[in-house]
Amino acid sequence: MSESIRHDPASLPFLGRTDAEGRLVAADAPLYALQAAAGAKLGQPVAVPQLRAVVSEAVKRGRELRRAIIAADEGHDYELRVRVVPREGGANITIEDMRVRPRGEARFTAEPDNDDAPDFTVDTRMRMTSLRPAIARRFGVDLDALPQPLTDQVTLIPGKDGSLPFLDALARGTGFERQRANVRSRDFAFAFSGQPVVENGEVTGFAMTVLGQGAPEKPAEEHFDDTLRTPLTRIIAAADQIVDRSDGPLRSDYANYAGDIATAGRHLLSVIRSIGKAAGDTREEIDLLELVREAVSMTSAEARDKHIEIEVEETDALKAAGEPRGVLQILVNIIGNAIEHSPEGGAVAVVFDEDNRDVSVTIADQGPGIARADQGRIFEAYERLGPAGEGHAGLGLAISRRLARSMRGDLSLESALGEGARFTLKLPRP
Image (cartoon, rainbow, N blue to C red; front, side, top):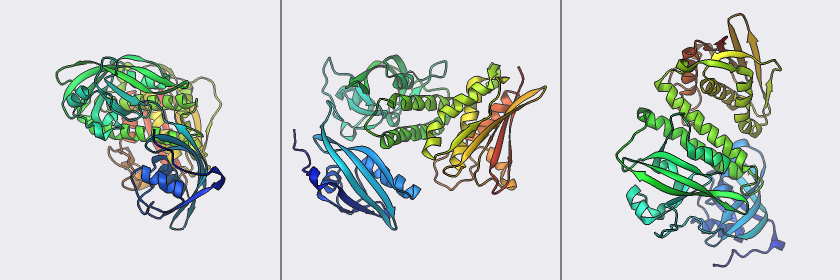
């Protein structure tokens, strides 16, 4: 094994500086060595992924951040405690602590073909980290390009109930028997099973076995593949942020975050299904209050990130008629929008109402509000009022209203510039 980066703990802290473009323009020797190990030089963008994420987040928020991150060179991992302070024209980096730990087995390497090796492996960030050469050739994957997102290579196909076995297993840290998928570049279908890889009591990835290959088998939602792929990419990015924001690498509560990822994946599949069919075909009695609580739980990580309090009105159970996953999808969309557009440290209020025919829930934020002239437009597909390039597909509100109306309900908006927004979901009584 190669020698670790030379550093004297007595010389801590190690310092560095970035410019306005995120380039590392000054660095003490250990920080520069990490930059070089990641394939970059001084004067180039910060190349250590988790450090780059912390710098970007600190500059975006305009405030000091402290994070525990992991960096690596060819043979070692390094646990770092970093502090990033934004300044005019860039940011100051301080490495307050730096500890060496041995690298785990089979990290980002391709396994040779043998009977005991898995067909391919995936880490907890849903990146393929190794493939048997025969599988790589069949899938058209360049082994030198690993690791790379699994969803860049394959489209996961939901089961009849809309679930994705792999994402469910990722959330629970358990094995799964069959996940159907399509290889994007080669246009053929296959299925795979998987078992978790556990190191030091933590699930670090999955070892996969290919079960079968056959003729092309495209999901019913093929026409909306781009709509699916873009949000899935955002989900993977969110998983990366989970690692970046933790107090250490893959803490024991990581499973809770993975649960959020799996739920978001199922939510996304509901979005795709909802474009092609109405949810009203499977209406049943639901507890609107219980679904609100579940939606708040699903969006709690975003709220914590912005120090936003979600205040849910105390009330008894509220029974309505609707499709549970469709209602949950609407609530996640609206609460998520409210969090996104509220100022840091603000609040989102959730209140209920009912009459002889309907029950309703209103989500109110403290955001900038929406001009009257724009209030009709935001319910149209692919319309968005935020700055271009934010990565939003512009489908959430359009699909939410369509879903609500398919359940014989409605989704309405009350707002004015400077006064926040109030979205109300109304559903019929059972």
